[in-house]
Length: 262
Image 1 (cartoon, helix red, strand yellow):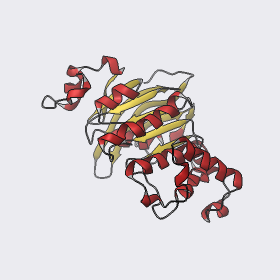
Image 2: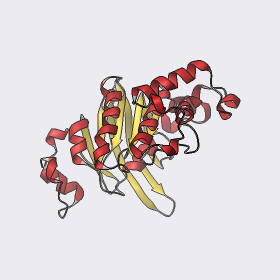
Image 3: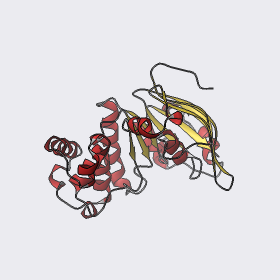
Image 4: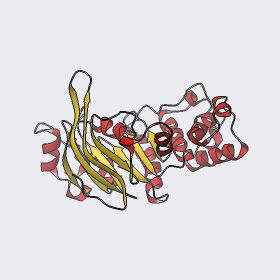
């Protein structure tokens, strides 16, 4: 069982997930994430990274174990209580999850749905103060001049920055980022990661981010864990992550990129 701490943003105890058909995605995960950490989650495709993040946010209901978010047991909550807790947790997805036919501003405003009246929000009608807040979020990711553009008129990197602005609009305490740069060209990845880093460093938000690239982990994470076959197999700092550990996680045939320093 994971050690208990009063300053834990996330605490996971014995987490397991078995999908219909008997496919086990997670097994016996014990993990504690302290407030203010930037935790990177490494592992091969299929190792359980996305399932872990989705279980934390209850997008998937785990089959075993418990998840606590800021001291509240997320796995025990239902209905309005679960929705209230989710407002503290913003999700950034690999494929951006924007409504492409809507404007950039409308997509960012959707981050306020959890605190807005139902009928006006369904009609995309938000108070003036929420619209100003959304414009401010766009300014913070360098897209204040694209508020009126359709989301599908933006590049991939710009769309992911809109997703980050939407997360900011939610006013969360915890960011879950599921391979947020995997769909982007290498030249754009640092641009997006720097915006996520600002949320952690300047806003004080706790970040859990699944990643493949070791160089991104070394540059942005304060701590990293690794999954293999649904199990937690390594936990440490980027400085402690060496070539031997890389081989243990990714297999003896795997070779790190030359710029990783491993």
